[in-house]
Length: 479
Ligand code: ADP
Image 1 (cartoon, rainbow, N blue to C red):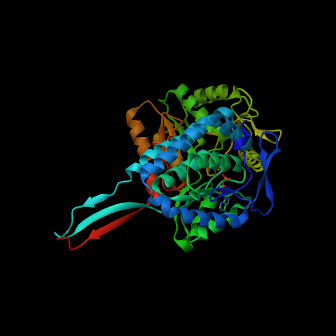
Image 2 (cartoon, helix red, strand yellow; image 1 turned 135 degrees about the vertical axis):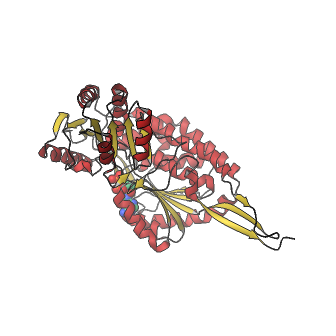
Image 3 (cartoon, protein in one colour; image 1 turned 45 degrees about the vertical axis):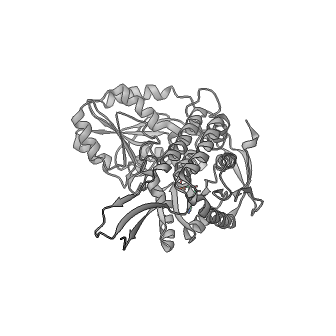
């Protein structure tokens, strides 16, 4: 691997800073060993980053969208050229299989490419005036300094999905990556510097104390917006903390995705969709299936085929060939996953496959039959490779079960009947619906949720709206 991409400290105003209050360790989840020791910038570094981003805002926002696009395009190319190295760093620090990490580099870079182009189309309006001597014009302006607080499960793509639209619109950014995966974020900062971003436009702050760093970002008057991906619990904290500065927020929070298989579904396709939408990143994504809802007439066929397919998975270190289930991110995640399984067992759940942790790093892909709504995963997000299977008898029951949650991020269903497809897609209270499809994320479509899954959209033509504000200009006395 190219060690030129490895950095161990925050990147502020175009420089790697020596400021630190000690250090923290980054652990390889596949073996528990220390991967790197990183300088902890603490909250002081966040304050410095805000000053730097604020100073860079005026020149960056006054440059043309075309100029910004050319730098974003450079960044995109450099990231793609470094695919192997970035993917290796990602697998080392978050555990996902190398093939998935490479996929994430392509997916993450696609947002940069997309928004480089979309930034040139931040159009306003000219409105027919209400008087002969008036002219009414609407323009969209960048919102200002944006803080991006990102999780460990997509160390690269959750950053680019936020900062690409922000930068394209003319905003400057302070990125605070998860303390579990700072190395990918720092490598991205290095490539951004090579791409030609001016000093202060992109700042990355690394530190262990998420809560105090988050507090500085949410209470700062100079930060105009926070874009956060993570748990609903932390999303609520950020919203509360941001109220004193009336900051705008984009929140991509937890999910509880249902996956419905109707009796007229193509079961083989449903199993294929189930594999990718449940077990990607060992079940550690917010759009991973949380509940399988299967019609009673196809329950047996689906379950048997699903078990047969999952039994083929190879568990292990994500750097090894052929591994498709990597480690869990940390011990806490293993403990939580074990608790879900134990709770289901106590309440009558049948362990059809797996069910145990291995070496305190991995968790066996697990299938639980006879799931019921009193089990904890009926309401809580699992975030692990556990697939509970519930049975239903009618469309109404399936939809009622699917919507019986505070969350509303992604939902999936399989049916070969066009009427059922339309009616079900409309009835699901979710921001994203996969119809005969288990993989739905793409830079061209809006990613985001209903209800407690958050607010705002990422990707697509809608994604840049979150980083601009609308200004109405009224010209009077035009004679
Ligand atoms: P997850 O369970 O997926 O780690 P979290 O919501 O705990 O979800 O974390 C998502 C991101 O938010 C991580 O970068 C984490 O360090 C950060 N974080 C956690 N608590 C806070 C907080 N109080 N304020 C700001 N960021 C936080």
